[in-house]
Image 1 (cartoon, protein in one colour):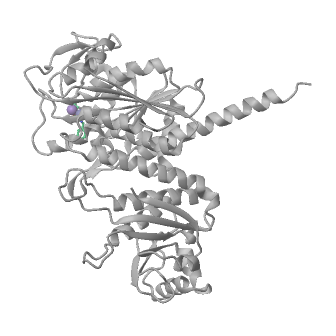
Image 2: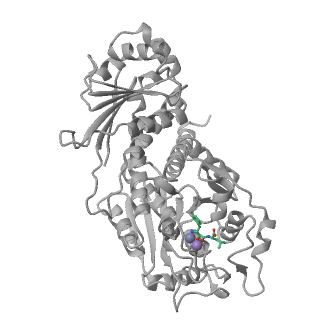
Image 3: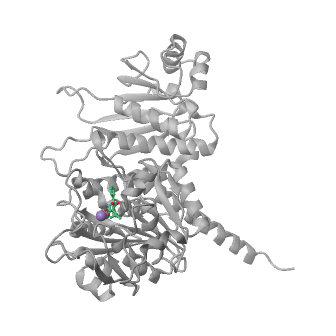
Length: 515
Ligand code: BES
Ligand code: MN
Ligand code: ZN
């Protein structure tokens, strides 16, 4: 686990820190002003500026070694333009990635770095908080290494990051949030990256149980096939019936507020491997369907972060988890199943399995009388076509909830984009043989999937995040991203703050004597 510390450090103080590497973040303004200040960092920045090598422009990077007056062996100056969250994120990611300690025996096995954000001291408080959040996130993700299924795991070289700012005390709360968020993101990444045979529904259940064990405020219960059958989750069971691995239904509870406060319920799609079932997927890239529990992983990640941060809010996490396999006993195209809600579903395509496990979890969510339910799922390839890999798809029947989720994502660079839910989109789900079909045509596939889910989410404000394009990266950088843990954590913590305000206002009213 990467260790973070926040310190009040000027450039001069940063120069005196003992570390393997000092990263100095520059803005254009700070770079220009350096000539008028004293000290070794200012001198370096001033000469880099006057030579034109690094003027604080976003993306410009300069490395130096063994500089007099600077205690760290290496220094990286990196430009962050005006200091927006996006620019800071890119700058930190580039600087941390550029730092590859020599792999000789002499090189230290573990390194610590100092990142100076002193140049950002002129930013408004909100912008500074976002820059800090982004610095913590970007340095963690640039140094993450996957280890679980390697015989000789490469250790994570980066052990500690000290972030230097001009007012550590004033930023402490934001810093605590950011470091808790990193722990959640890494937990989510770790589980999403694990191969299907390392991350079975059973193992996911065990991970959830151990997440709750010994942590006050977090409880976990894991249901198996018999209990799920008793609940009448016929849709969920139909997806699982072709697999040798038993299904799991994970119920997590985080209690940070009074029992009387309605919880936020997070529902995560936990397909630990999606072959497509009898409607089998083509072979190329099928391995990527081990990430089909990315929604579940993000719910686990949020709970990990909650257990560290302990905000005053109640949260329930629900994870239906199983494999989607072809088999002699597997569900067949055309089969009709009965969901927990009582609605019958014609399974026209067994590869549209995510919605089939989520719909029963959405019905189960009703018992918590939630203030809001958000489901998170790697649901459709169509969403990747619509929004690419940058923004998650956001669907909601509730404008306030949609706005809150969108804002929570914007603030932490874990963005989403609202998509429509006009009733006409549900036309294609009509069938002669059941109450609803599980697929419509190819057109608007991400929306018709959401329309299917909406039928099971009528009892509470509901939102759906389609993270098929954002939960993992393909190609050379193949791996889980840990998204949308930052968005969800932000949303949940904002709910805590909003409820505190309401509670505060109510107490004040009572305390005021009537005249
Ligand atoms: N897990 C997939 C969605 C997916 C596809 C995620 C590609 C990431 C990349 C989901 O279960 C699925 O197979 N959806 C089908 C739905 C279709 C049959 C209506 C799809 O998107 O093709
Ligand atoms: Mn599928
Ligand atoms: Zn799937």
